[in-house]
Length: 282
Image 1 (cartoon, rainbow, N blue to C red):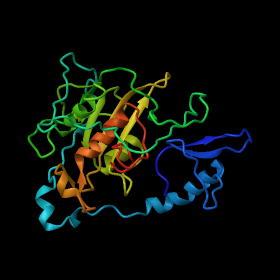
Image 2: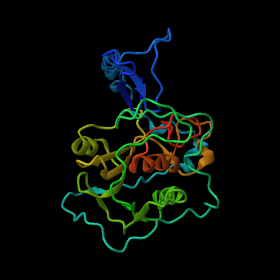
Image 3: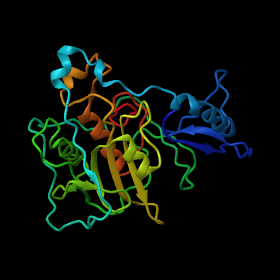
Image 4: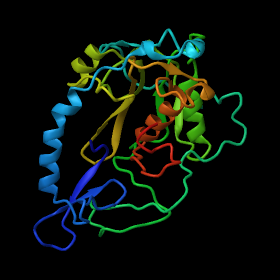
C-alpha cells in the first residue's frame, strides 16, 4: 500500500505524466520503467478496499511487564464550535522537557534527499540541503491551544515537542489551554485522543486501521495555512517511555508522534529518510 504524497509530472512533455513521490523519486515498475500516473490512480483505487478491511488495533496485546508504561487515561478535549476562537494576548513559549539539554536537530538525517518542486513551476530537481513543504503557516508565531496540564503521564508533552522544534525554528507559542477544540475555527488546536465518531463527524472520515495520528490543515486562497489541528488515535497503546517501545510493535511513542505531527503543522512534508522524524512512521 502506497502512503504519502504523490504527484503527476510530465517530465519529457510526452502528454503521459509519470508518478513522482514526495521527495522527487520516480515510482517505478518491477522492470524499472516509470509508473504512469493514470495507472497509479487505478492501483490505489483497487487497494482502498484492502486498506479499509484492516482490523482495528488491539490495545490488549501489550506484554504484562510493559503495561505500567501505558498511558491509561488518554486526554481528549470537547468538540465545541461555539467557543470563541480568537488568540488571546497572553501567549508564551511552550515549556521545555526537563531533560532537553542540547537536543539533536529533529530534521537531521543521513544520506541524500531529493525534492520535487512541481507545484510552483520549478523544474523537477534534486537537492541535498532542502526539505519538501507546502502550505506553510501564514502567521508566525504559530499559537497552539495545547493539551491541559492535568498531571497525567502525557501532560505537557505536546509543549515539549513544540519547544524541541523551537530549538531550530522558533515558531511555536502557546496560549492558556482550553478544554475545547474545533475544526475550521481558525485556531491551531491540540485535540488530544479523539474517538472515531468525532473524527467522522468533523473531518468526514474515521481513523484508518494503521493511522497513529493526523494533522488536519486548512489554507486560504494564498496557499498559506491558517489552521492545523492535531489528533491522536486512542485505539493504540501509547507511552512517553522511549525504552519501552524498542522491540515492541504494540506500544507507541507519543513524543515522537507529536513531534512528527507538529512538523506537519507548519507545512513540512514526509521525508523518506530513515533517521528523519518526518519519515512516515513517527
